Image (cartoon, rainbow, N blue to C red):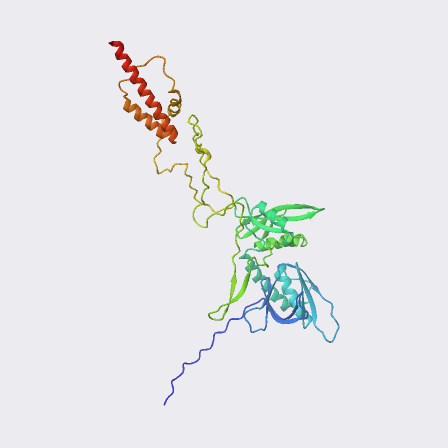
Length: 419
């Protein structure tokens, strides 16, 4: 019986190895390491990548060289147990020691590192013409790469915010690039240094003229990229100016590994940090912000009315740094609802009821066009409109009843006089 043919095996695609300006074996020892550890290292841009072997495509460690302060040669140990050649990279916050097998390898690493950091080929190294040509190619690639990217010290902040950042975080650097405030698409440079205990802040203007960046100083200097602008300020001040690099090495959200009971796999769980809560009640999660209820003051006396609220004082000012919301004010009429304006004689109608108990000196004839029913209706409507309480309505009805009886007595007395 013929067995079923198995499908042919398809080889797994191999990951392309990363390209570097320079790569070779390098032994590294960090501040917390007890001994050197050997890596396959590659330099690309201003970053030094470390691999377990030269066949790996994924690095296991990397080192940012933008914070490089100086590169030093360590004296040979002169021991048979360690015949290697040593050199050190002094960064802003740490010092990394390296060991190579020969002087040529050390000069090559030093030359490529200084070329990408300072954007120039060092002239004080012992190198062959072929090595210098390789560094010239790396320099051209690095300049093209930097022309397309924005430096890490470029932040979209205002002039005042730049000064505050340099003042509050001096350990992160003292040179910062920001957009120009004149709206021309240029760039401004803000620096902060300390002189005799007092801070000195300067601002420099960089004009963007075509593909070039021109630094507006006494002798204008043209640069091909923003990174070249940063390098100009660093080199001309003998590295006293350091690009501002925010410290983002620390996590802000607590996370942990949790095992899934269903499939047994481990997952990373990160709790969301609660928003800082200010004084007062917390706003609702969705929808417009609810206004607090307005207390209503009851009428204490029938002769004293509550004044109408001033519409100009009922607008709510949104709190700064909060999301924009649609505020609804019940005291302000909606534009889609018709506004009925009240007559201007309201004050006179409100003032007449308290004077009704006083009898007139001489009887006045009642106008024929105004009968008792219409007067009663007018008084009833006025009382409902302006005296919302039950006590005021009863008082008005009592006054109307007395007025009706008095007019009836006057009318009967007039008929008796005629007889």
